[in-house]
Image 1 (cartoon, rainbow, N blue to C red):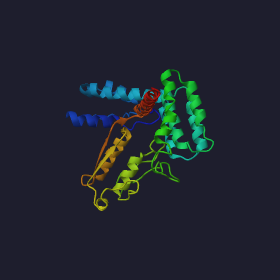
Image 2 (cartoon, one colour; image 1 turned 90 degrees about the vertical axis):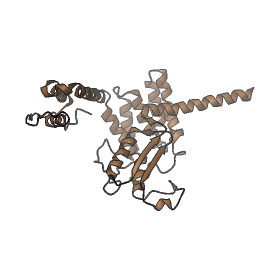
Image 3 (cartoon, rainbow, N blue to C red; image 1 turned 30 degrees about the vertical axis):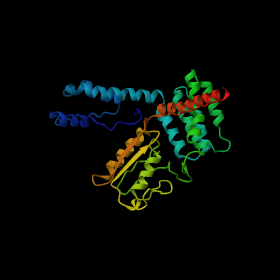
Image 4 (cartoon, rainbow, N blue to C red; image 1 turned 90 degrees about the horizontal axis):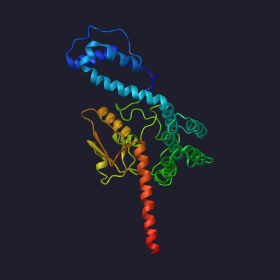
Length: 304
């Protein structure tokens, strides 16, 4: 969380939650003071006597929130996130390049965050005439402060080999709205999202599931083994992603399951790994290095 975003949690709300689990009747003691910041919450937990029993557990959560808030501020994660969303959802190359270069020049943004932005730019604008992919890679190489960071710069090239326009299926960005646009009301009575700059992007998986739940899934991209089965009502959906899924995808699938209600179809999500950006980079670079090692061995055998 960022301190610029007001916490909606009030003192009364905390007391009522504690009262439900502790049978302590504290509803009569409703302080009028509102908790507006994480620091206010921390002071309240330490001072309010009837929370002493639960102070250990609550303090742990508050401590985690304080640390998250510190990192968000120091590493400018909100600004980075906004640029990431713009790269995925907008169609202006000039604006995207300006924002990416600004982040690359910010000393508070970590090298790995800069690498994420660079790789998103590469995926989004690899076919753009006059793109600045080479310039961005050069900036990253100049900023790399260790051999490991120099190695990571290769990810910008490897992500194109792994998921570039020549090898990926479907129209990833599309024209007009495309599948990276805001998806509201995925199905009737279903998941909806309030549009803001930090939640604009929705994974392709969620778009596909939304179409499936409305019986509008493109069977050319997602063929059925049994044509008859494609017309039947759906009770359960099993999704397994080779290469791994993300925490965001898992969270959104959980929201979809909640939205369908007890009588609706249930989605089971699985994958070969649960990725964040760091593990994904490691995975892609690892596959490349294994391939290069195997080719080197073959070359040596051929020479023998």
